[in-house]
Amino acid sequence: MSYKLNNDVRSALFEYLLRLGDDKLILGHRLSEWCGHAPILEEDIALTNIALDCVGQASAFLTLAAELENKGRSEDDLAYLRNEIQFKNLLLLEQLNKDFAYTIARQFFYSSFGIYFFQDLAKCKFEPLAGISSKTIKETSYHLRHCKEWMLRLGDGTEESHNKAQEAVNDLWRFTEELFFKNEIDELLIQENILIDSNPLKQKWRDYVEEILTQATLQIPQNENMQIGGRHGIHTEHLGHLLAEMQILARSYPNAKW
Amino acid sequence: MAELSKEKSEWKVWEVFTQLKTGEPHIHAGNVHAPDAEMALQNARDVYSRRNEAVSLWVVPADQLVATSPSDSGPFFEPANDKIYRHPQFYKIPKGVRGF
Image 1 (cartoon, rainbow over the protein chains, first blue to last red):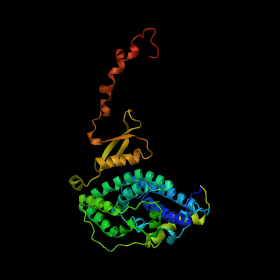
Image 2 (cartoon, each protein chain N blue to C red; image 1 turned 90 degrees about the vertical axis):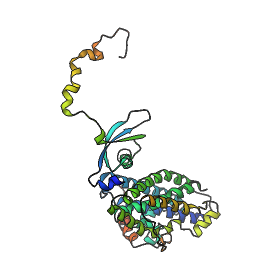
Image 3 (tube, each protein chain N blue to C red; image 1 turned 45 degrees about the vertical axis):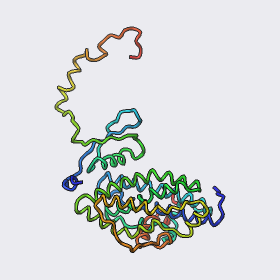
Image 4 (cartoon, rainbow over the protein chains, first blue to last red; image 1 turned 30 degrees about the horizontal axis):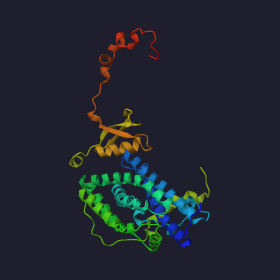
């Protein structure tokens, strides 16, 4: 497929799509690690459903990225044959599952952002991207419903669940600033009228998260020590291990087929 | 969520009923464990309708269902069998009535 875009815009869009695709792919893989290990059968199915949604969305974003790049790479090449530094996902999403509260807090921070983010992106001027984004809204709102309800129950549940939820929120908070990361790539795409500038996004997210955490009797962390790096390919130590597991088959048996 | 804090034992069982098309009856699909109604709905959705099988879901606490017991089967259900006049087939069908 060919799109009428100049080279700068095309490569900016490619990079932007990698971010979106990598976010979903890494989160989806993390969630899939719960398969067979969740606290109860019903939750096992719920988490793997969300994992599948994420991997499906990743596939759509990476397919589009590969088409834009137009260098003969496929979505699978992008997913399985890139190294750590070439992955542009948010640090938040590569963090370990650790325990159920961590998994839920990670999902909650991301889905509550996603619900506003993809609504904006669904209005972007690059139609294929707008299309994928509007499809993800429905799934994202279910993911948010699920993890929001769990945040409330863990926070306002037993002493143990409350403490674990608070610990997860405190630990993961430092990765939330990166949700709103922007650099020259975003600026170029905004300038070219492809993306809309979504400044109020952070405030909307913050208001919503505060509302739910307060309802869940959890404290909003005061941590100002925010960590970013994922969008530049600078990751925490966890991503390498995840990639090793995710990519081993494709790298050991190139072009393997079912 | 005080109930949940006190109740540390296993979660309640909820019976799940799915409706496949608007206007059709809700049919029993199975059951799920859940701590409360909202989570029961979500679990039911994930277990019984994750491929869009249903357009509507009911969840009912299993302990709220009133059911006959196996020992009821005689007195409850049998009498009709030897009272053939209770079955419409007992009556002669007038000629001209088709597709009965």
